[in-house]
Length: 242
Image 1 (cartoon, helix red, strand yellow):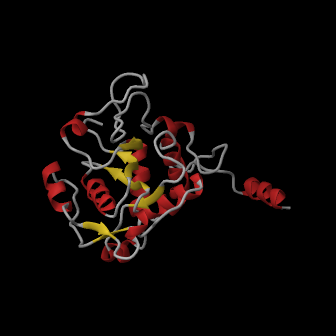
Image 2 (tube, rainbow, N blue to C red):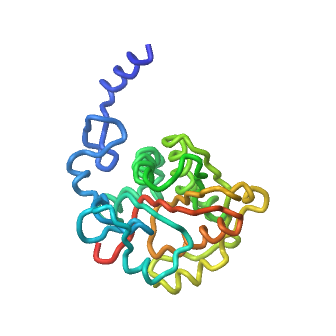
């Protein structure tokens, strides 16, 4: 009965591309045009932040220039695509356009990207949103991604492991130094729930990584709570000249 209902629904409402509404063969996917217009990261990558590097993947542990200059308080990181073209449109629609339906496919891509770096008992923790911004936006996109990643991977999610001690201004347009200064000591372990990270591997989840200042603040807070190791994953990565 359920299968019949699904076939009937698909006949009336065929699957559509999540970026442009063109018809697709499968649910929650991209059409061929939008897939080719999305800069999915492949080949050689920075093992610390997931940024693409020149050349093919030879199985070596590599780092980008930024991660060689900046001491990252996490071990390894991954990202799905570059913050440009179709990928940028998807992020903005999800973050500011109430496209909550994008969370499931995006989290699926992210889950695939971390398969080689995170153990099965890792705790998934989203980057927190300040309560005042949460009221205005109505949802925390990082939390939605983390929860759907937990469903894709069958792993535990701690949605409130971290909190923003105070609201920060938008970091858009700020240079690296200003971003790190703005985020210093702004994120802390949850007073009652943060201890659940003690002794655990923690996977931090966010939608976009630019300088890494927000993820660094979260990683430091997770380590303060006793996390044994910290990894990161983002849907999109901002890189120079992308």
